[in-house]
Image 1: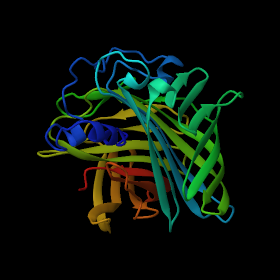
Image 2: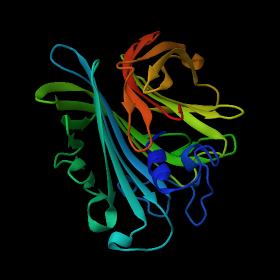
Image 3: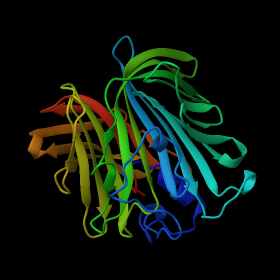
Image 4: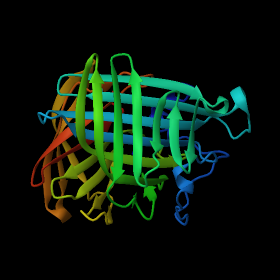
Length: 347
């Protein structure tokens, strides 16, 4: 689940945050397409945009280390929101684009955002060869098969990474149909969690060579939440064994909904039934006037997994137009590793 969708909707719709699901994500999908469990995802077509749907995103996070094994994280996200089903060209296009980028260390967290209209070429996505961009920020396929480049820069930071695919795409949920609530709201959702990453991060004038791993998510829908869901906690965890876990908790006013996917070292996904993924806060941290759970106990009994997930930098607050917490995490316990955590709705 990518929380950045909420930022676009909250910025351009007037729906109160909790009246129709978190940030309006529970509003009806009048006139827009809705996910269909019988849809078969096809590539490279589905790497591109889906303008019949109201919301979608292209989202990459990376956990990295420098030559001294100091840890870092980067985030790059592009979103598209259709404000109506009307056709339009140029400045009159109904499609709004937003980008978020961040770089995080144990002591620093810097971020930036950009907003654009796709109809004037300022932002967009091409499916083959793949390219997603907003202004000079870009995630793009290289000439060599299975390789990509990633770039973002703003005041105070920048990063450039080369990405190499090392495993297959993962269809989340049931063949890419990911259920988000007991009421049946859903999205189309796939991931590429198998990337080696190498390049550099720059904080101010300090340029740091780094390498590690990256995780890429793609998701689109028109009404992904139910009306009572007030926020979520989303985990992407990579273990030293080579296995991986995506899991999320969608917090409802009456009850929570959890789901996820276990990914074997070879890349074989096992969808998790609602309730199988368990995440409980262990420590609350004060961040920008909010109390945020930055230390968690995560369990998956069917895989004998019980781990502590702890923020690398508890102050990784994204003070964007609609604020949220997102940053790299360490993983210790029955399985060791690293990953990313995204949390919304902590107002």
